[in-house]
Length: 127
View 1 (cartoon, one colour):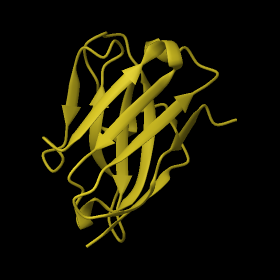
View 2 (spheres, rainbow, N blue to C red):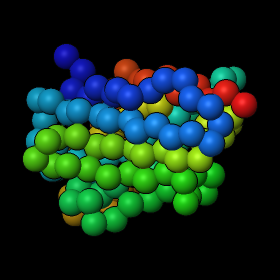
View 3 (spheres, one colour):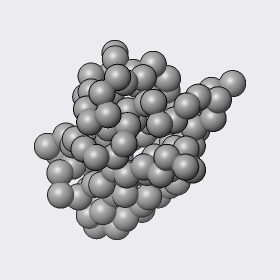
């Protein structure tokens, strides 16, 4: 059983918004920093956003700063990605990932450091 499951993807016009969710099961969610990554058509997987275990700090790729917001609800074992002002180049499969973290206030942007991955949810932005 995959411990992370994304939802909320879909088709949206440029300038629109989507909210992705990632529900965790079978792990102690509050022990994990969480990240969102994406893979666009013909592109390699890239970092989008990450949030520390407690939610005290968040980190963003330059391409999404000011448009995307990552948040988490530890009692609900869920991490979110609010995406506003979507652009055509935001199209791709979005994956959430969990990194068992000692620090309460850090989260890595490097995909190879993440322990668990979801199956992905497709986001398509029409221009």
